[in-house]
Length: 201
View 1 (cartoon, rainbow, N blue to C red):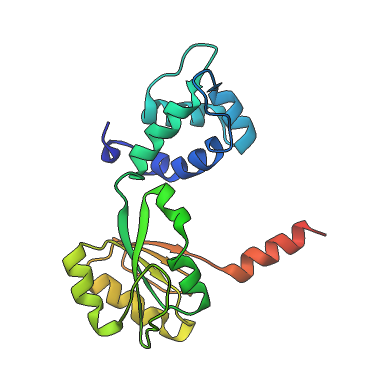
View 2: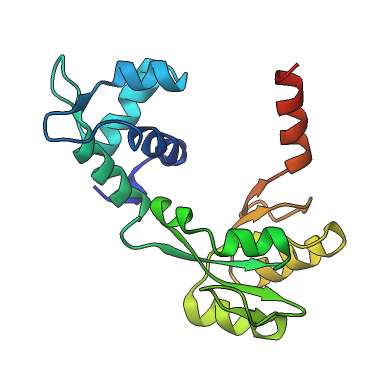
């Protein structure tokens, strides 16, 4: 089954399933049911069954799915064995932390390079290039995913540059606007922390 045959909503939930499944026993005799997954993740059971059927076909009656096989199937669908390259603009502390975090590979994304107005040589395993190389790098590597970790005052300009160079999906840590045909995930760390604070009361 090709990834493109799955609904976008299903593909969007697969990383959550994969993260959860990786916490479960994965031997040959270890199975997990859609009911258990739905309960533990707080997702409707009917939805989980539809998602897993689309991703891996039907499980065994009354037993469910072999956990290791289900993990492998989801990894294939997410491209974990053939990661999609992404670029990051803004290599301050947050940018460098994201650039050198290996956990994204599990979900099929490789942040291949960083870009900055003032690149620093000592960056770990990933290269950081000056911004004047951005357009050529995106073109030569077919980049479709961009991550923005620059200050808010510069974020919109970076978003516009990404769109101009063929990027169709953006993860931004500062407010930006993009055309309707570009997917935008807006991250607000302060809002997330405020939510944690309210729950901790």
